[in-house]
Image 1 (cartoon, rainbow, N blue to C red):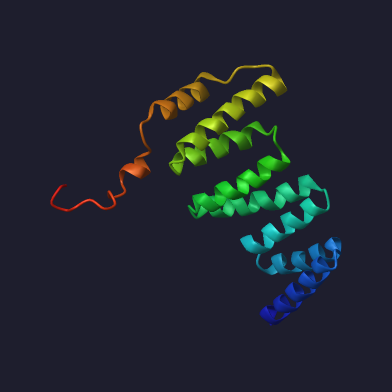
Image 2 (image 1 turned 60 degrees about the vertical axis):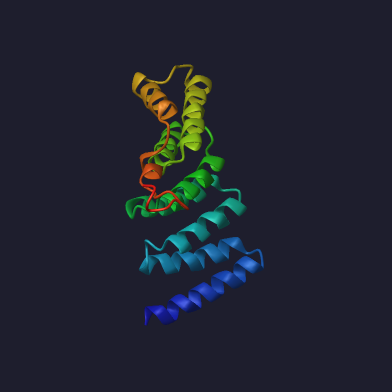
Length: 165
């Protein structure tokens, strides 16, 4: 029964969104997530609609649920993409910047991780007038000095003969 209603709610939501009636579209999407609360696609669309309505706090609330869903299921590239959306809405959020730096590092994105750690230091300096903790500085240095990510080291060398290995 719900799936029939779900499709009805989704069609109505899409119609409202196309008409620029974002509040009504959100109301329909909220009916969908009452039954499927962890649906990342619907949660992301709700976040997008709140962004279009210039309601960043509400958008962040839904995007965070999406990012946590992806992180919990170890879909790190998708989690990173959503956290980057959130950072656009909350550029001074130190905890979020630090989480994004850690995820980038975990995913083997060394330059992105370093850039994000630098952003953490900037946030601390600008917002609080303090320096990063020693632990944060040590993480930055460990990433900076690492020649390549452990994930990259595990990949076979493309185009190399098996006789040469």
